[in-house]
Length: 412
Image (cartoon, rainbow, N blue to C red):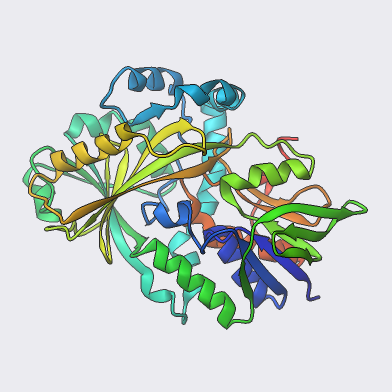
């Protein structure tokens, strides 16, 4: 039965949900206060991280965080003025950093990201957005074999999920990736993954795909939702009220205040991520890479070289900090000693993160509002599958995946 549906948030999750809902025959309007993909979906590393199954809060988190915070060259930063407001979230986040809960989180992440390339391909096959999807290998760049072996816990989890690396050392590293300098003496290579050649253009084209298939995109700010007898009937915007039967909340970190209006206090905080986008680079890597020492990814894109990552715990009201950007710049120069470029674009964005490193997917109570947010580091990777899952739920289709780990009501 066709329904009138409003999707709030035009990042990858909202765009994917809107497209799949429209393909299911519903009347779909997608709303965002900015252009499609203006936030984290635009500034991300562009990786389809099928290997991204290891949460940040693994056992030993507190010890590792203390070591990182004492080291100005480590890829963890804190906005200390915001820390008191984050303490309840940090407490829950740290409580999950144990072997049992880590295994639970990994089991929840595997089905979300494991078929990422196929899910993106299904979303864009035969459309103008297809040209931005690329298949590629992926390499973890380490200083030496000892640094690789120090990551044994996460690699054991990856291997158990089928991600078995080919480990190269010495001269063999430069045979596979000539751009890497002598600072990298070990490369763990994973075959058969993918990346996006221009995330911003990809999001813009996905919005055009939605419109070409009969959906509607409007730039509007959502102020509130109206519930009648406990179910959504209207979304209030700066362009006036918009009636609907169902809504999808996919606004990333900005979903938090709207959830409060539905009576839920979701422990959602921002992990601030950064990128440097080098225009006119003199070199490009053959494959996307993860620079293990700096915890940032390197992706050869259509219009330059993007280096994106690190974690800064903080709020969403302040601009970029210098330290994370300086770290990326310093580490990039170290691992790519011959790289020159015309200019470097700086960016900061906000990853919406839950205490258990798993997103919220599914109906919020019996309100007719479906959550599709909280993806932390895997938003681009899991967006198309999340959108498809939400579309199937709204269309009363049976899913072949356990939704328990992503229960939108689990924090109530």
